[in-house]
Image 1 (cartoon, rainbow, N blue to C red):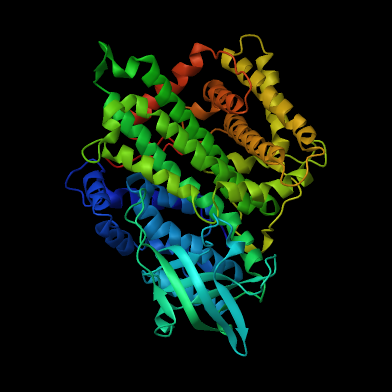
Image 2: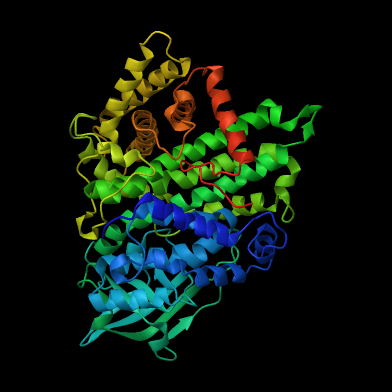
Length: 578
């Protein structure tokens, strides 16, 4: 596939934003009032589904070779952000679930399976995926669903306890155990049509009620001797685990990247509450605690989007390294977004409990965001993916390899076509970590120039702390046996190092080649980079020192400007409806 250009992507994003309209308009059928009412009823937003279907947004989920518009991973995440900005339940239930499921077909399906899946999606149908095991967290290798071999295929037995859209999907991607012992070659993946199942051998179990994303159609699926002919197999027998690992390289970065828009709504809601209100005789917007919480949430959004940016673009530019970056995004972003959103509760005070009215979306997103951490690709599963790769990545001295290309860090930069066959399940080099030395050297040289902004020197010192952290990581791993808590702690620290390298890369390449769509040069200024690095350094447990006042002013001024002019708080600074 050849990647579409920025003008086309921006037009697709704007079309969805305009389609869904002003979230604050009480008469808007996809506005905040309608979203909250549907959430109270524990229903999917029906009008939102109708509008998105009529718009043909499912074409974004289908590769261009099959009649859709999917040719850039970063573009797919951006196009669904307007949906997540209004309702994470709609974003996951209508769109992202089918994306996560269909990715397995794009990777492992035969031509006729891919064509059938594409036709279903383009006609408005849904695809669901059943990875989850039974009561054992996100480890689908311990699946309770078995596929016993027969003369002409398989017989399915067992239960998948929670499958989003399982009861209304036109196609199901099922991962089932084929052997008695667990291992890398004991699972198969099947593409099943629920309409062709046999009565009594397949049942949809009652819907699960959830605290977050209450409108999701999460049901169980039970199989009692259901036949699955051999032509339902995705890929070769025994390759289910490998297929899942390949598809994770796309899906693990996509959903968290989309969810950035939900955190954007939380920050926007807190700001709208703070504007014009007073607390203890002072304007709320000027109280130190409220300002610090909102500024920090803005910086965390930029950190999150920097890491999401490099992971989604790496699928095109660094396909042999995507597995590490996708797992890092899936591990860190949900945690980062949840923490910053909870911290914003200091701004809303008691209004954080509102379930309706102008601030009700805040508590909905506080409940919805943790759901993104659940399932087969949850935090622990992603960290477990990184652990076996970490020792291999740190075999050579850190930062000794080839750094990442500049295009990895440019939000609106062009991309080569997406070639799924080039993605591999394990990386042997991490160009993002190697870029850390280059960016730190740039900061230090700029800081040495007389009259350089104080933010530059602060950013250089903080980047130096991150570099030292990376250099010490091999020692943290040395002698630690497999499964030792210290190994997982080292992987956690490595992810934070990658986030710092992503921020540094975005700043560095914005400085050398400014984005014409961002004429104010905010991202090219170290005034946001220093606070971003400081937050990462503190998460690593190191002192970050006191930043120059100019950094806080730079971040706060941009935050208020974007709020007043209705622009998104992510890297793209996108114009918003309403």
